[in-house]
Length: 241
Image (cartoon, rainbow, N blue to C red; front, side, top):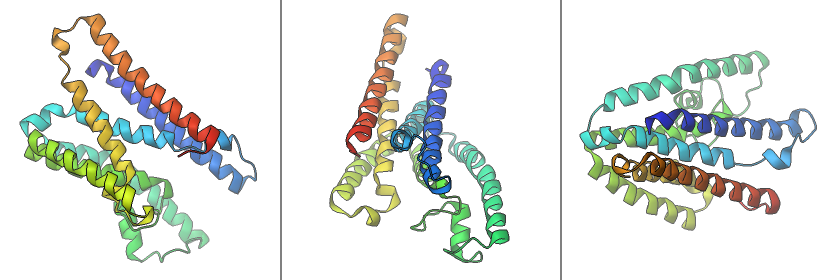
């Protein structure tokens, strides 16, 4: 499977590109008075795919760590390095721009909002770098996954079995704006990816032929592509979300 990780990373990059196109097309109406392919790219499917792949890749590549209760500190260190340094540089650029143009109106530069924004802590409103809101969900997942790595697979399964129903109940019973971040639908997408990664790790690949393994991967891949395409088509044609 690790030989296929470059393909999965490429798909994740594609999801990121779709997210960028979504924001570019949406922003074009505001800043350039034109809706550049707005109807086609005004979709959250790229974000959905990005979250699912995050859960899938992290779970599959660290399944042995979950079983052995190892590498928790190394995992958190790598996640920290991959997110915060670059995010802080971009946030500082934004902050300098806002101070220079006096464009900040929502909060004072010296407010607690700025500190939480740099730490990617939920404040109920988008962070200083607005598109970084997705990272807040990723961080929740990383912390939860690290705890599971420290406590083992059995604990991880219990967390998953409790977390998923709670998210579904919250989404069905609570107003969207009152649901805490750990229980929003985006976390369900990440946990769905975790489940897929776990299932794939349990496939008896060592006893399967190369053709059988290839067929299994292709079935998973094209099944995901089909679901993605159907959901995107529904939203594009009917406005379903």
